[in-house]
Image (cartoon, rainbow, N blue to C red; front, side):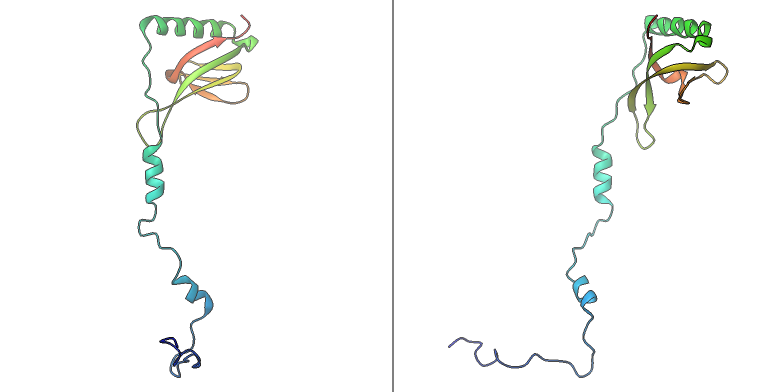
Length: 135
């Protein structure tokens, strides 16, 4: 004889004053609770690594200026280039380096930008290196 044998066969109690809770509301009380909403996103953002922008040596800067001058003289031929440049991070210090290849279309010395034939615009102050392909 178990200690519950006296109550095991009794009918389930139904309140006469309150209607039963809808199943959806009943399920909600057992749903997981995130006390720190958005905390996982903050941890992910903090853990995301960025690169530090590298400074060019005087020699690298001279070589880069020479390459840009060469591109300006050949811009009508739309030379094929591979450009590595720094993209600053919008949320934290640092950024990342990106390399794109394409044909140079415009070098805007006033706004200090280079535009490729695919429409990609690169700030010249962010360029780390340029390789003219096929020259």
